Image 1 (cartoon, rainbow, N blue to C red):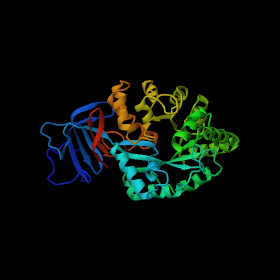
Image 2: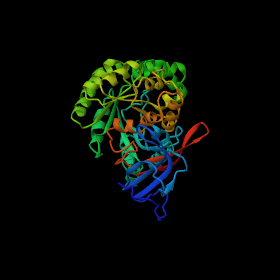
Image 3: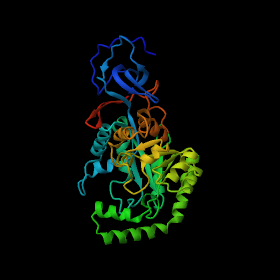
Amino acid sequence: MFTSLPAATDRPWTLGAPPAEWSLAGVRAVLPDRVVDDARLVVHDGRVAEVGERPPGFRADVDGGGALLLPGLVDVHTDVLAHERRPRPGADLPLDLAVRTATDRLAAGGVLTAFHGVAFGERTPVGLVAGDPGPGPLLSALRDPVAVDAGARVLYRVDVRCLTGLADLEAALAGDAGDVPPLVSHEDHTPGIGQYADPATMERFLVEREGMSPPDAHAHVAAWRAEREGRADVAAAALERLGGWARAGRIRLAGHDPETRADVEALAARGGAVAEFPTTVEAALAARELGLHVVAGGPNAVRGSSHAANVSARELVARGLVDALASDYVPSSLLTAVEVLVRERLTDLPGAVRLVTSGPARAAGLDDRGALVPGARADVLLVRHAGRWPTVVAALHA
């Protein structure tokens, strides 16, 4: 341990490139179970060596000026890359630039480890042609060492009713040489179940986001639903195959939008580890009873309700049924959700921080980050309030 470091080093360095050993003090540190005022952090070789109350006379390399010290946030489901790649219809940006700006946008919200959703399926969740770029270019961009060093990871999202999605996924997984089994989420966006239990929700999306007329949207959803209902055998075969991979330890399996207890029981039976965005209290309760990690939406927690009229993430947090929040479509929602959940007295500050740090890290199978404890990666944030809301003033990668 490093209690023998009484004074700051004389080496000049920048926040963007800290040395192998450095220290920070004058902060309020959020530990897994408590908040330490006037804390100090000592880092050695990119790992937390010590964290706790600042000893008398200790002079650190960096003075946090009373800022809140948090572990870097972990996001197990973000779709920000798609927006950065194509911010407007027809306005495509270079893919490596999109990865860079997506990573920067997440880091601005405190996210230092992000699982970017890469979809395997011929159609989007609302039944439109998926278009370019396909999974291959996206995976190449996310696996670039620059992106990996900045915290980019992959969430493989497969449409179980797509005739080609599973085969494409299997080929892609062959190139994944990560430190933990790949995180795979199986999805079924058939209107009438899950996220789109009310088909009118999909119709509204098509009108508001895709510019369809209401009659055209209604006709499209009806046709899409009929086509997908005819592929129940495809879904059954895909789920059986995914279950075999999960039970063999080849992947870490998540089930997207489970709606009923039966959905969750089936997920657990096929070796699933994560219930991603359960749409009802029933599904979340079942997931908790069966030992699955429960991931809810950060935007849902901030707004207080689901945009698709599903269960409120705040209600699930209040019931103790959430292990992790994911940013989904709003990168800033995780840090903001911490503020909202504490303000609404649904949990305390350490509890809210766990939902966006150690909780998602464990859901993804990562045990080396997400908490200010000795031995963890020293991915840390300094956070202050700007008016009503928290803002990141410094982010340090290990």
